[in-house]
Length: 233
Image (cartoon, rainbow, N blue to C red; front, side, top):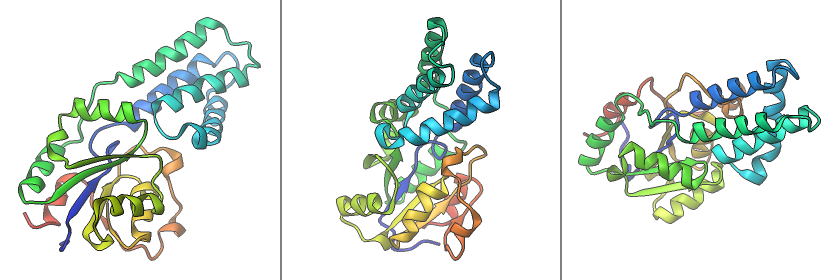
């Protein structure tokens, strides 16, 4: 059981609500659109290369992803892509942004119980500010959170800045999330606590090798409802 915790922080995408499967569906449709030019595997690999190249410029989120779709399509077709296909790619992006919000099973009950028990709950997530605000509004979970932090990245320094803003010590902070790279490892590096809840679909960029997890002391649970057994409720 965690003690002396003042703030419980939650990742948003694939921790509070479903996100990554929608991106994978969009990728699959994108690859089909370009199947007359290249194999779907080739298109997917080239898209990932473009996304990695553009991360520093666009950051994380749907809008940067959509721009990377268009850039990849133009590059691998030598700018011979029909305008109609470009329009279809833009439509794929809009569909992604307008996906219905699907909460992870048990999320609201957990947030309600933790909030009633006196814990200060916050959201710390990456992505596009407008898109994340839109999803949070759709989720109707706003009432449980004292603070929403949309971060440009989730590295140790980003978490140090967050804790400074919250005016708490690392030992008083616990991060709950699905990404080992973003939600767990950097939090442990600054001496805070972390709870990992795996999600069945993970972006390859967020995956880490086993060596990176050696000697990492964190709590792993299977579903978010197990959180209630870790805190004083």
